[in-house]
Amino acid sequence: MRRIKSFLILICLLSIYTVFLYGCEKKERSDSHNNEVGLPEIVIGSDNYPPYNYVDTDGNATGIDVELATEAFKRML
Image (cartoon, one colour):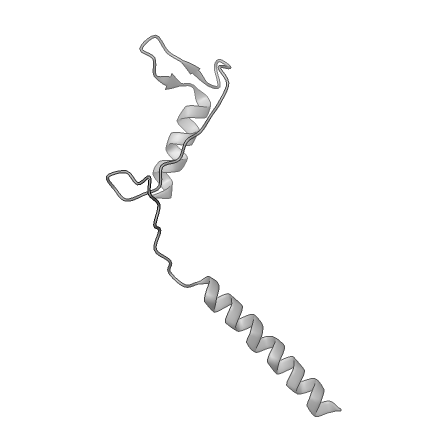
């Protein structure tokens, strides 16, 4: 009985180890909408809610949320 229990524990540990190693595998991205750097394009939608996000006089999105998102995406590289 003790041998069977030890064998089952060993099988469970090997299974968990295998799953963790498979998750660490480096995978290539194959997005069809890549920019010049080879990264996927991310589209964010929002409402016009100053000062968090709004369109300035030049037609550019601006505000606190836009600045935070821009900084977060820069740090992702």
